[in-house]
Length: 224
Ligand code: 5RP
Image (tube, rainbow, N blue to C red; front, side, top):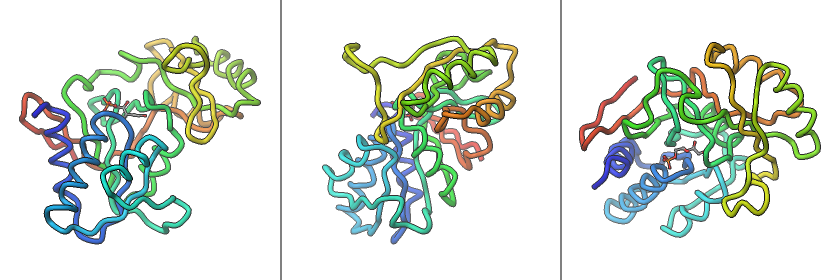
């Protein structure tokens, strides 16, 4: 079992009968979806899920989980998702899977947001390994990009995986991948990006993670 599987299995143990569970997107979140489906099958656990992307919805349905839309739910008990970077103060960078708006909605709506990651995700500052993903409305991407450049951002629209077109989110947005000067603190950048018209959502998650499970060679550290 690799570290992503180990941490996903640990997160699945937090799920209780009748819970409404938010499903993240990515390889670690996929292991969680599989572990949850396994508990449903072997322990007769009754759960309802809500997915953060079309990809995780399809994955969840393929393993027999019931998936509802956010619009049908008035509360979410638990949201489990991965992250691309995690700082010592539990700020997250998310969004290589690009469905940021749903990810942040679920993180905010859930009573508990558990982040699952292996040790490679720990960084001293947001932006160490990746640019900041910024989901923008298609008709406003140039205007949004100009505003982001005015606060020091450098980057461009994210291409799709085949590199023959653009990455389009489950809700039809485009994604800008933008780098910023290392001296710009993530909390300040979060506030600046929240103020840019045309930005649907961005990948900096501050004060949202309740529990962070980090696996390192099979050993799991729990940060709360
Ligand atoms: C998707 C995300 C993912 O959780 C993040 O990219 C981590 O992915 P993985 O578990 O595959 O390493 O934020 O938008």
